Length: 306
Image (cartoon, rainbow, N blue to C red):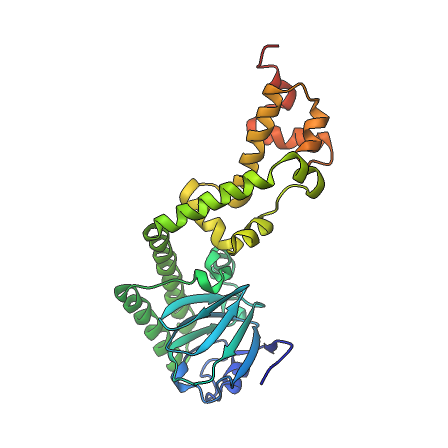
């Protein structure tokens, strides 16, 4: 069956119904296992849009998942995250398999009035694409599985005044470990990461020329990410780890280098340089340059003798 429009799943109860699962014990949080799902996607494709957070480990599927602009075949188990209002497209193959793994569903209302309601947004991996999912070692997966087991056990208890705080504490621990394991993944993929950085350098060197800047303007973070076939969140995290700068800061640094070269080696006016660098007004360029260097373009130029 093929759906042209995503199926909007507004509640955790609705997800349970969609997948033929018993009614959730808690309306705002649930841990489900894929082997318990009775209604799995049929041959064709299905797009889902959740109104809640999901954290999943999936293994042994012949489903081809598309999240963002990337496909991924889940032959091996890996961990991935989705924030509310993101679309997951599932393409089902000809030979159905019995999937394994689990899925943690957290409605934003469960976090209401708790610090995690705001801090959960700092975790960039909720906006990574599937090909940027977290590959867990056996020991790491055991750690994650243990936390999920604690959350599930707490959800299955009678709800009392301690339930929410205990579950949120476990959820915070899960996110902290996931953050740690992603940092490990960045380090262990050092070669691939530096190759990505080389590609970024080449991309910006090509993009930041006078003709392109004057006709197309300055590159945006989203444009850079799309050209590198990587999510903007993953690129931000990767650059932070490699350079200490986020993507916009990295672009600004390259623009500043070009501006310094033009100010120090040409006789172009400030307005001309601003135009060549893709600024609509010289005032915008002046503000940008001073923010980057603590000097105005004129003051910087005055450092060089005629």
